[in-house]
Image (tube, rainbow, N blue to C red; front, side):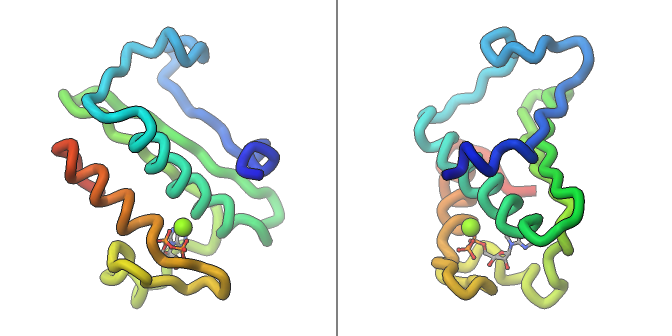
Length: 119
Ligand SMILES: Nc1ncnc2c1ncn2[C@@H]1O[C@H](COP(=O)(O)OP(=O)(O)O)[C@@H](O)[C@H]1O
Ligand SMILES: [Mg+2]
């Protein structure tokens, strides 16, 4: 299901990198399935929020200029309401009718487990 919604997702890589994922000079110390879980949650949230947009777009950027790799997922949805910001990573916090409120709590725990952080 995620795959069919992926047509609105753009991978925005620096020009010197090839679009071939295997050629990316990026290494992170993390179990692959858990890192995948983070991507699924962030991209899934972005796709949820652009569902009603005119020109839906999700952009995934990878920035490795520092010694760490920053993963940035942007969308052109309405944005996160200011009063939701302090509670985003709280387990079971959701503003969705059918939400579980666990995606960001799990993702930030995975990032922390491997020495990372949410920005
Ligand atoms: N890309 C986003 N745009 C706007 N709000 C977001 C976005 N990502 C997360 N949120 C907010 O954070 C809440 C918690 O997200 P999450 O932990 O993934 O749980 P869920 O997706 O089940 O609601 C969402 O309900 C939503 O209010
Ligand atoms: Mg979610």
